[in-house]
Amino acid sequence: MARVVLGMLGLGTVGSGVVKLLAQHKHLQLKKIAVRDLAKERATTTTCPVTTDVNEIIDDPEIEVLVEVMGGEEPALTYIKRALEKRKHVVTANKEVLAKHGPSLFALAREKGVTIFFEASVAGGIPLISTIQRGLGANQFKAVTGILNGTTNFILSNMEERGLSYETALAEAQALGFAEADPSADVDGHDVAYKLSILAALSFQRFVKPTDIYRQGIREITPEDLALAKEFGYRIKLVGTARSTNSTNDPNTKPNAEEKSLAVRVHPTLVPLSHPLAAVSGSNNCILVTGDAVGEIIMVGPGAGSLPTASAVVGDIINLESALKLPDFASYFQPSITSQWSNTASSDDWVSPYFLRLSVADTPGVIGTIGTIFGNHKISIQSIIQRGVKDGRATIVILTHDVREGDMNAALTDLKECPFLDSVASAIRIYRAG
Ligand SMILES: NC(=O)c1ccc[n+]([C@@H]2O[C@H](COP(=O)([O-])OP(=O)(O)OC[C@H]3O[C@@H](n4cnc5c(N)ncnc54)[C@H](OP(=O)(O)O)[C@@H]3O)[C@@H](O)[C@H]2O)c1
Image 1 (cartoon, protein in one colour):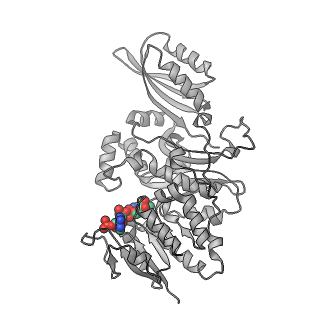
Image 2 (cartoon, protein in one colour):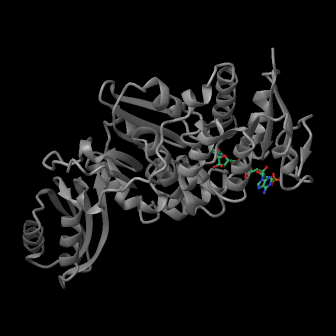
Image 3 (cartoon, protein in one colour):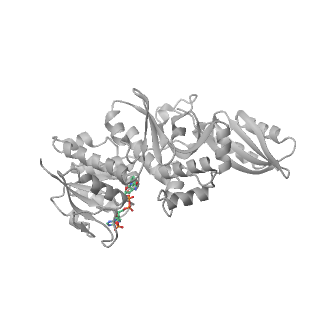
């Protein structure tokens, strides 16, 4: 069998897994690997030559496929571009580069008649991208929603199950290797925003700039929020959503025919305990894809880790190998993504119920005033309870019916003017199927 010759950038967590899996596929020849530091101890041994000179791979005409598993924006972006310029196919796990530079990279690949495979860039071992691209290719997509970050899911699961503070749960996740020393990419939602940008491109043909994605992380979530949510029949998850505004979140809103913007957002969300997203614990990912023909499908599995992610990378290489035998295969495998960025819908127009936890003075008239303010902003309360009266202060927990986000923000602004209010301790959206 003809060999496919590969060069790989990176021999860390994912690269080591790729080396292990490629050992079972002898016709895929890994010719050279580039790393930063030759002296570093590795999780795997390899007979493949290792270099610190990336040019030895990019300039080698025998290498047909660049496997990029080094991560980060630069110099990965430059190396990918150079490989495409030299008409090498690229297999990458790099969500950051794709989310920030997808339109120009896919345009360059198209121009050069090569392709970019990127299954590992979203949801690790779950074959989500090929499912959206090919298995569900007959559908018009309405929404892609899910738990796309295993680190934050692991932290939230531990906070809920063991009553840990965010700080303690994060420290444990770091000690176990589930979270980075600098956790901000995960806990502030950047990682999910990159993945949503890629999912939007696949489902709606346009990338969304990560900076245009509404993003809120999990740092403010407390054990108290998790316990109260459970009491009301919910679990708090970091949920990412990319939704066409043509299948608007608000059934009463008719989208403007001219409007092609997407609602793309990531934030903590109360999910009903009976919903499949609530059952996903630890570092797993879970994605719901809604298409007009198929309805809703759910995929659950490991969203990260050496071998699960390598499974996606090597799966791409195997697909690429079969595709190389087809005439004009690049046009078949190249996703139909435009080189334009998509607009995003205003965050104010998002509609969902809310969970609120307020710290207030325990004085008469508080609940009446809250009711009046909410009524002024067309907010209907589903349930309101007072909790934990101590030293003249009380906690009020409110669940609302559907609210436009702009109306909720206006109501909270008015509420903050009230002398009885100490703080809006939490304002968390409740999941709403769209
Ligand atoms: N880890 C996961 O579970 C996972 C899951 C899905 C996607 N991904 C994505 O996969 C990619 C790799 O992640 P990872 O966890 O494997 O990262 P990692 O463990 O930090 O490994 C990065 C590798 O790249 C090498 N490298 C970095 N900069 C380099 C440079 N300038 N020149 C040459 N080599 C360089 C490093 O060399 P040294 O070893 O010499 O430092 C290291 O071998 C990232 O895009 C990440 O987002 C990871």
